[in-house]
Length: 360
Image 1 (cartoon, one colour):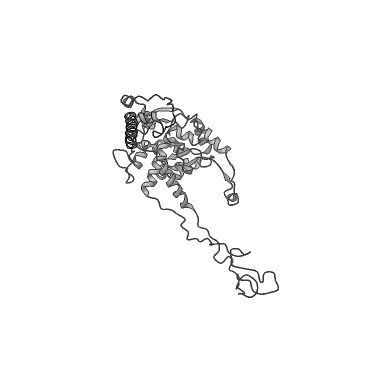
Image 2 (cartoon, one colour):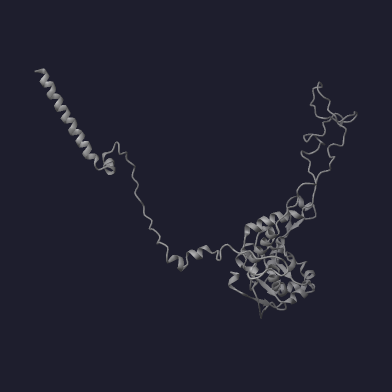
């Protein structure tokens, strides 16, 4: 876990080698990772860049059609007036008519955008940043980071002064991020659907996100590399941190941007300096439930697991018709049955004596 490594190595931009300098891990990387909040916020935030569209308000009604009424053995739908053309007499206006309007014509005043709570937006961004420090989540998202030496990956401030795309590509190769760029470049294909005709013909996977503090040429040098996004640390948004609502984006920080995260998001001990915000506290200090259950402290007090055994199942017998089943429930039943038999025999004997006396 990222919290177990409080110091992060700074890598040289020139050769991609680790320098002897380290920087403390910002507290935002130990925040709880709430994928449900990320998905909810991303779904709503992604709607806020939609452009309103609607059909023309008079489409299908651009003719003075009127119904012929009853008595002419035709439907009472409005019909185009006039003569001398095949259009005259044709049904109009209805959504079932040729040249008619659509059902429920779309309007531009639809509720296109969604309002999202500021705290929810920040919680989602914090969760996405924390997830970017876990190699398992970054790889699960699809990034090729086998050659990357460390996550989170921090480069010195010379990253912000790269002037050419050639030097930017050299840096990505030096830190092992070129595999992820090649993966994005190879994934470029023609979009399926009508979007290919609407100025969005190609689609491509997302690659590394370069986060900087001051733009001294870094934006212009990285923006033309396939799959690479560039963003200032002060404007980190969820659409860049978790594309598609999936956490674990591969992020490359400049040293200045990495050190500024505490000022932007705060720590557990103090608020953020640049905005009024406190980091969310996790409900569980350690969310690794398997590790908790298997710990010595828990295992020393739990009962040993019960051995599984195959119990032989017999058919349930009715005590009213089965004597053995009755005796299991009531052992005195045998005595009661015997007394009842003796009482019946004595009654029959007494009755026989009375009949004999009367016949004499």
